[in-house]
Amino acid sequence: MYRKLLLASVAGLAFTGSAAFAADLPSRAPPPVYLPPVPIFTWTGIYLGGQIGYAWASGNHNFTGFDPFFGPAGTFLSSSAGGTPSGVIGGANVGYNYQINQWVLGIEGSVDGTSLSNTAVVAFGDGTSLTAHTKADIQGSIRGRLGVAWDRALIYATGGVAFGGFNTDFSVANSGAVTGVPFFANGNVSNTRVGWTVGGGIQYAITNNWSVRAEYRYTNWGNLRDGSLSPLAAAAPGVFFNGNRHLNQNQVQVGFDYKFDLYAPAPVVAKY
Image 1: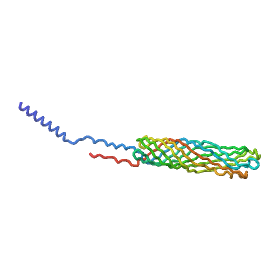
Image 2: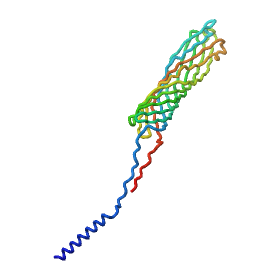
Image 3: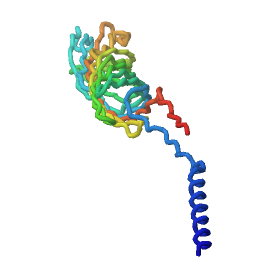
Image 4: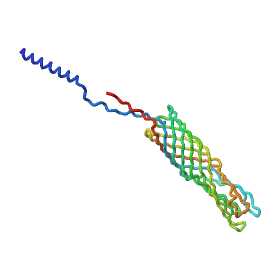
């Protein structure tokens, strides 16, 4: 019996020693997987984008001048024709935003091609008619932006200087009802205007880099002068007309932007 008790004690001591030895061995489990930190979203950065929409304008086309076909001595005439040029407007933009808490400050430049056009026609009692067909080919702007952000949503106001190119084809025609001799002449005038523009919009960041926006802007182009039409009057001595139009433009556009991450956070490396 004493022999069996001694053997059991020795076996117990051996098992305990083996367990303790196993506990002292180094762990062979793999280290935890490194997960890079998720970058915090910010509106700060340089961005590029595009936009497309619809534009419409208002403003009468005014004509004044001397019509030699009106009676034996001719007469001075003044008239105007209304119209609302409208069409598609779209292009590209580039800008920079800087976020301070909820406030977002920025500057943006944009270039748009347009299909805005309008034809104004005035007719006089002696059979004389004046026609002016105006097209707005390309526009651009440099604007400041000020907005308030709620995480990925941004509401902003914008305003600055606008540049526009306008092309007018005009013509003078007389049916010959008074003189018995029909008359027709045409020409072209190109204008580059500098105006001002203001508006606002809303923007939402779908990801940390891609965002979409919707924007409205009003632009005042001032007076567009067609110049004197007297060079058309080589066949009718004394005829001259001047044309001008005060143009106000509205536009609504939707667009997208891609923001570049200029400052990426350095990864945290754990040591084991």
